Image 1 (cartoon, rainbow, N blue to C red):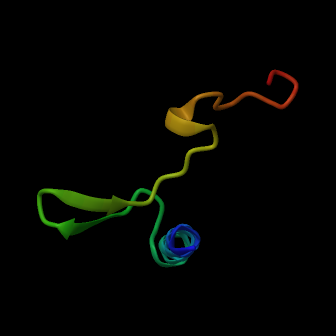
Image 2 (cartoon, rainbow, N blue to C red):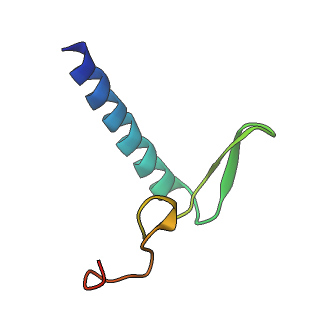
Length: 61
């Protein structure tokens, strides 16, 4: 049962962080969270993971 809680908590954190990035950052803006090591950057990917299938319509898939 604890696994379900962890899964739903992680999904919730993911969705909340995406909402704050989308509403609070400009496109291509980068915020250093750990200077020189970890930056939060707002980009968009219209394909699947690593831009696979980017630019293809549903007819090609």
